Image (cartoon, rainbow, N blue to C red; front, top):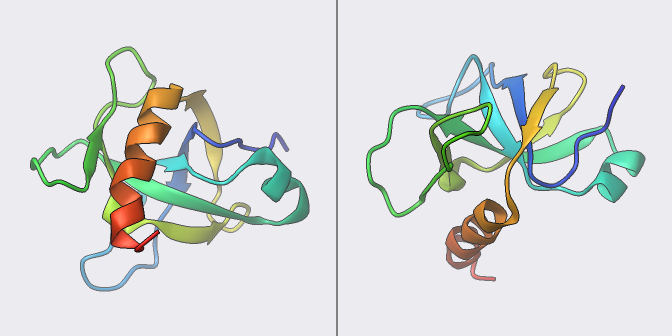
Length: 110
């Protein structure tokens, strides 16, 4: 099994979910590193949606990637890579990760 790295664009199962959480098989972006994945079955991910709403917690993906849409930074979650059937389909550029970090830091008071 190929391990994801920070910035990997993936498809995975977000169900089961509760309330307004994202559900179903959908795209996401991995925030944890390859080193972390070598020691853990978990990954920290943000879901990606094609429905752009202009919220300050959205990060738009640039054109030309295998996944289009916006990253929902405020929906960050830890998932079991195997149980959620995580499938790597591409890699986001470093600028996307920088923008995700910039939007995530104030949410977590980092």
